[in-house]
Image (tube, rainbow, N blue to C red):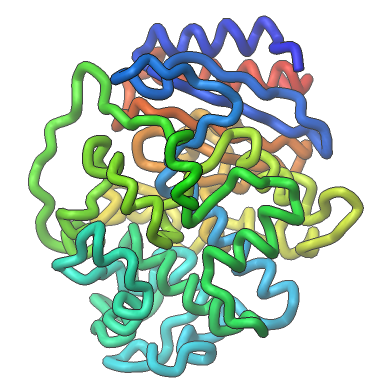
Length: 380
């Protein structure tokens, strides 16, 4: 595929603004209209990015979990208004009997906790983590306020998926077999096989890493120190060998965009319907109290009722996403982004390896890139 000059220029601008290696891919309807990359996958040996480089995308992973839940809802196996304990009876302990699937999706369940001593080795023990999660006490009544479920989001909902799957497959296997492979998104992984490790981009904070202040209080409950997202720490292959549904996915932009194209095409890809259009459109409705400050996230998250980020005016929407109010999206800490515009059929994923936390107006590397994608799609 020949890369459009507008994409080439926007990728070059991203590197000027500090990016190291970047991929961008977009589908419009069923057509791959952008598939481009630039830069270095690993600065230690000079390995260049190509279309098959795999990038960690952190919380973009949550969009995969949310989509898997919607697939189970479509099949009549999960209801967002039902308690988690309907599907996972042990979860009813310590006052959690009324917490619903929808409240976890929207980060309003009061259960952002993860085991305080959790480390990369411990992430491999799914059963130990979910048993621990079943035994915790919520921090507030269900629906009372927003506390971002940084990691617990994926284990709670992943366990619901496992228990409602007639084959009781682990989340990683379910995601692979029910969504990724049928869609042709072969390079979206929750658990990465060891033979693909050499394709993974090396993460960096770039020349000016942020100050790493110690986390305390509720944010610390949600993200124990040894698994806190950090470029150096998450270069450890153990994070990719474990199932971490809320934060652990690795992907190429091309394969990631294919998954988001399922959303952009309102649940139908390649002539097969996976999820009802009305179901997905309903998820573009903002969650309750959408402008509330979140103590864990340390800001406002513009979220819909299904757990996806939403588009629209910025703020509160992320400026990368554009102004459509029919967008379902999710960002990852450090800047990765995936989104689907249900109004136009455009699906986009941007992956990269230079993590950053915020940028001043005019210095955000992916706004020009997103604008270029929309221009190629004829949506500028």
